Length: 420
Image (cartoon, rainbow, N blue to C red; front, side, top):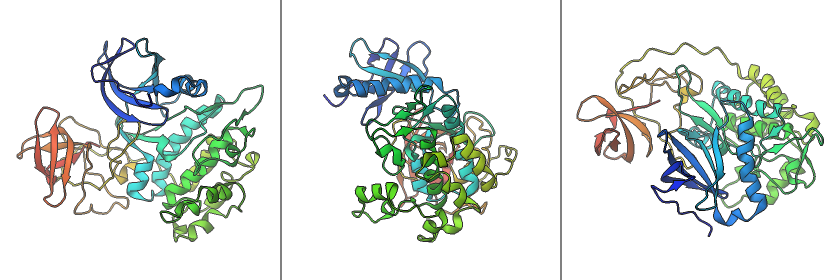
C-alpha cells in the first residue's frame, strides 16, 4: 500500500486524534491532529506504509526527529514527539502546526523581493542554519519550499522563518570531519557539485552554495542557471547538471544582465555570491553565519521602526496569491511591507493597520485574497469577525467566507481585512 488512510477521529499512539489530512509527499503524509490531553492542535507526519520496510527510508524519517530536536533555534520546526504507533505499526513525528506560507509561493506571487525584504528572511534563515552548523548538522536540501514564513505570534515582527525538512540532514562527525555522499541527495536546482558525486564530503559549505542561489533568486526573480529559466518544455536535467558541475560560473551581475535584472543586485554582491557559488568547498564561506555576516551590510539593513498603533482605516483589498500547497498549513503570502517592517499589534475582532506596498506608495485599487486565507470580515456592516475565505468571485467582487463563530455566505470584497 502506497497511501495512507487515517480517518478523522482515529487515535494515533493513544494521544493524538486525527482531524484531517493536510498533504501527502514522497516520504509520508501529514495530518492535523489534536492532542487529547491538552487540546493543542499539532501536525502529525506519518511514514508511508510501503517505505516502512526500507531501512534507509526509515532511518531518514527517524533522523528528522533526532536532528530537529538538537538544534536550539526558534527558526527550526519544533518536533515535540516521535514514535511508532502500536495499532498501525507506522513511525510518526509530531510537529508544531504552522500557519503561513512557504518561500516558494512568496517568490511566485511577488517575483522579486527588495534587499530589505531579503534581509528579513535570510537573517532568520541563517540563524537556524548557523546554529545547525555549529553542532555539526548540514541541512543538505535547502530550497524555497523548505523555508516557511509563519504568521507572527508576537508583536513587532512581520513573520517568523521556519526551516523545514531535516530528513536528509547530515551529521558531520568529529572523526571523519565530513559526512559522505552515498547517493545523490538534494534538489537539482539547489544542490552543490559535491552532492552529485558519490563519496564526496558534505560540510556546512554545502548549505552555503544553496544559500547563495536562494538569495540571487529572491533578489532577481530568476534562477542563476540558464536551463532553469528556459521556456516550458525546453528544460534539460542533463544540461542543468553540466551547468552545476562543468560550465564556467559567470559573475552574478553578468548572469542577471542577460535577463535585464542586474540593477536589482546590491553593490558588492558579485564578490559575496562568488564565495557561495564556487565549486571548491574550501573557497566558500565556512558556514551560514559567516555568509550572513558578509551579506548583511550589502543589503543596507536599517533598524526596524517601532510598531505603528492599531487603527481602523477604510477596508483594503488584497494582492492576488496562488493557493499554497505545502506539507504544513499555509496562508496567503505576507503583504510586501511585512518583509521589512514590523506588523501592527493584532487586536481580537479588529483589523490591523493596512500594510504599505514595496515602495510605500498608495495601495492598488483591486487586490484579492486567496482561498483558505484567514481574514476579518464585516457581515452586513456589523463588527469584524474572524473568518476563512472559501471562494473568490472577481467578476462580482464578492467573497464567500465561513465565520469562526458559525455560518457562511457571500460578502463584498471591501468588507474584508487581513489578519496580518
